[in-house]
Amino acid sequence: MLEIVAGQPRQAFMYFLRDEQGATATEYAIMLVLIIMVALLTIVFLGQKVDGAFQKFVDLFNP
Image (cartoon, rainbow, N blue to C red; front, side, top):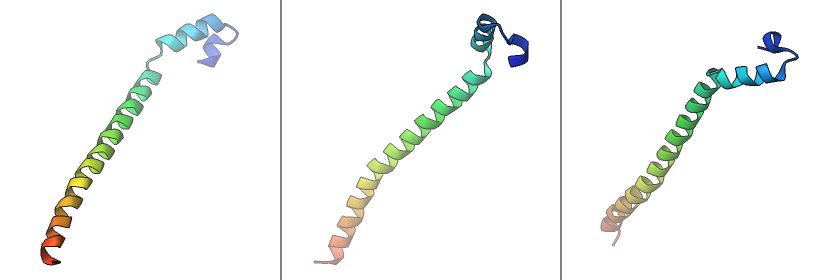
């Protein structure tokens, strides 16, 4: 890229706008962040419910 547009900032900028490789990497990064957020929220909410269920079970055997 730099060899093609060296010394021509406008052409370099236009090439950057048309280049789709960066968009693909950005899309993958956004998807990864969303997947991690959903996984963490699921773990937090299910963790609280599972903890409550186990606590009820333990309370049955410890009067």
